[in-house]
Image (cartoon, rainbow, N blue to C red; front, side, top):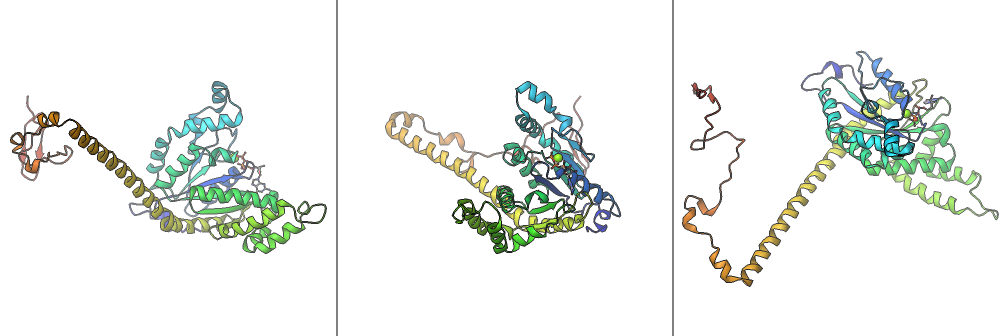
Length: 371
Ligand SMILES: Nc1nc2c(ncn2[C@@H]2O[C@H](COP(=O)(O)OP(=O)(O)OP(=O)(O)O)[C@@H](O)[C@H]2O)c(=O)[nH]1
Ligand SMILES: [Mg+2]
């Protein structure tokens, strides 16, 4: 449980809120989960109401009150009509349109950073619309570069008891982890219907997963040999073994509220992970981007100088006429052109704009404004 002291300490030294990005297959229970963690936070003492963003333009009814709702910005039905799109194209386009305004969303979120501890995002039902679109990536990156962030990957536990389904769901989770590189929590939802121990067991010991695979129908052909699918999954389970080490898994029932406290414990651990792993990576990426920009500039400068050199060789007479006259630059030390930063405080000798009143309280001088 996050200590009540947290929100009581709201002030300049308050930690930033953490963003929880819920992602999951259609019908996994994302919206119900958001509602559940929302009511859990409200029931804390003192209450810690989160800041909620609904990014699903097609939902007709959300079980929580969103602070920012994509449906207030774009009308998904209108988008479908105007752009002549089907439902998924409509959702994707609506999300793209919303993303063009995401800087305003970030501003609003940042304005509330001092008063909230959690920012929660509910994403569209069709998972790939968020995970494989440019706008999903832009939103995730924008949020994660301004706040600590964690992905809550919601899994429909009763629907993943078959080893093949379990594996494809985990591979999907794996691809999202490597795409976002954010701290990741697997949320096995609907544990009131199906407890998630089987999943934990499969994740901890791949041999039990392979055993489950072997006993499952359809994994042997008519001659009793393992099918291609079976061998593929066996090899994949070894790959996933490495992936499981990087994440936390919790079982939750969004219906009853079981496991929500454990979920928030995992969120707290993720904050530390974000600070120690994601943030340095983000800064490295930023520095690399700046360096590559510098390299590109340097490269074009070098090419320009080479061209000038070639030109000089090809046409020495013209070059002789086009010399810099040293006498014209006596006041320029070393021939360098002085760059003035107009945004900085003026210094003696610099031009002063007399149309503006200038006050120097420490010198007690008050320039009069000209009539
Ligand atoms: N028994 C049980 N049902 C749940 C639980 N969580 C969600 N559901 C049910 O699962 C169905 C889908 O829930 P939603 O919250 O709409 O799922 P979603 O992932 O937001 O769905 P989309 O946004 O349409 O993809 C609803 O009928 C919920 O009542 C749970 O913990 N237990
Ligand atoms: Mg939903």
